[in-house]
Length: 111
Length: 115
Image (cartoon, rainbow over all chains, first blue to last red; front, side, top):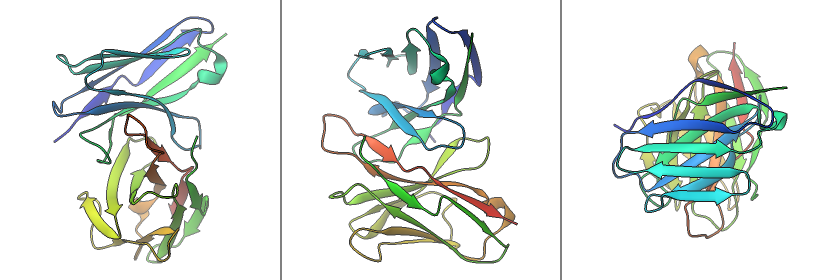
């Protein structure tokens, strides 16, 4: 079955860039997503990328996709304390298909 | 961001009781989903519901669970005879407005505690 893996923890200093990595196994993944979850809160859609794209930029967020290696990353520029949260990578194989989530990466931003 | 509304935000129930979680998804979409997140673990797919029928379900979604669309706007997840291991955050999700991508928006979740 599908599997999505992430490192569990990342700590960065405020103002630095954060890079959160994700690997997936399903070669038929069509859409790949990044969600943010703050403590006790729901899942906020940050951005997504279609599998025929290599990169997508949205303000401070840059998503890179290496389809050959099945590797997805999320770069947050100028990381702020408000970025502290758990970041989930997720994939789906088509429009309106279920999402398969990674284990989540807890981002800690220090002063 | 389009809004998916869930109620209750938190429910405590005794083991063996039935629980109904409610969701109002983004309007004008026929697809709805339920996911579950046990504390500290990953988000797991439970079921997808399309045009008033289950379109896909996971192995977690056994006979204990059921989904309904009791009226045009609400969408419910019923858990019969709850067990301690059903304690989790339950998320409803819905596709967003038409776009080039496949945007899936989640509600704030219903936190279920079975005691």
